[in-house]
Image (cartoon, rainbow, N blue to C red; front, side, top):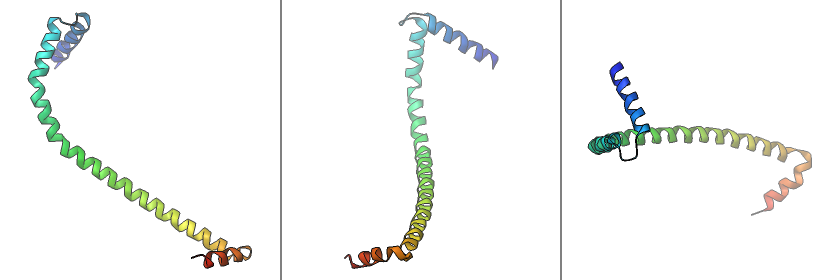
Length: 100
């Protein structure tokens, strides 16, 4: 394990110190080209799992929003009922009932 870490540090150091078209850059490009099909396959395999997670997260968010809006709606209904039963708002109640 330590050897792999040491090799990675050496390669990173060489990569930063060399020119744009040096041997380490060429090896990086060749390795990236060789590993590209595996990366594409891994992305295609992981995509359904990401989609399920996003769907579940959206479902949880929608449910919490629905609960919050339900509580807010009940609170507003209570406030309206209090305002409509107050003596000073009898005229408002009559106006609301007359509107189509």
